[in-house]
Amino acid sequence: MSTDRSDGQRRDDDPQASTPTAERLRVARVGKPHGVRGEVTVQLFTDDPEHRLAPGAELLRTPGQHTPDRETRTLTVTSRRWKKAICLLGFAEVDGRDAAEALRGSMLHVEVPAETEDPDEGWYSHQIAGFACVDSTGATLGRVLQLVTGPAQDLLVVADESGEETMVPFVEEIVPEVDAARRVVTLDPPDGLFPA
Image (cartoon, rainbow, N blue to C red; front, side):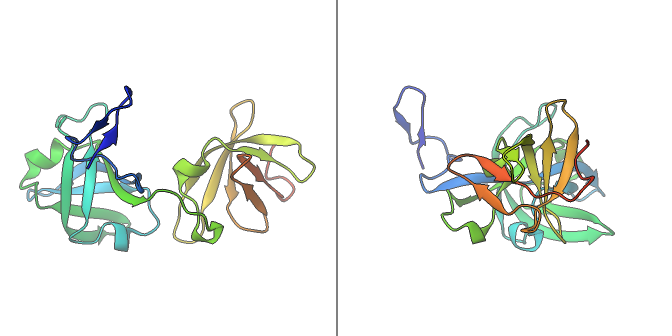
């Protein structure tokens, strides 16, 4: 694979560079180890862990700010199980508690098609973050910080000018339009959702 460099040249030596038709999607963050066999807890950023984190899935790992293991590499999921509401993952490349601890704080990514032209295919947080939010009259309500995916419904996290955050259900009744070209989300919030 190759990746663009700032000098306009292409690199062919980056084993984790995204292909021109794909981009990275953050799916989880590694938490603390679980047990002694190398399993880790993960905080999910995907609403499809059954598919994205299935055994056999290859995940691109990038270290967090305080992650002891600074090497960026691919991790292959060997097991996924649930302990109550906590997702536990095992990896082929991680064989014990010490190795699992060294991954703490790492971000896990998958490659997805670069952009979808079909709005019915849905949005990823990185695609919609930064969009302006307006009401039906065009009055500014804030800016999208992120899209939080959930099992029942997705939520837009919208920050107003003062920085106060509001969770907005990402459903057609409340979010009737997303204009990607203008980077604007039109909201029709129920009374009381946004501070007066």
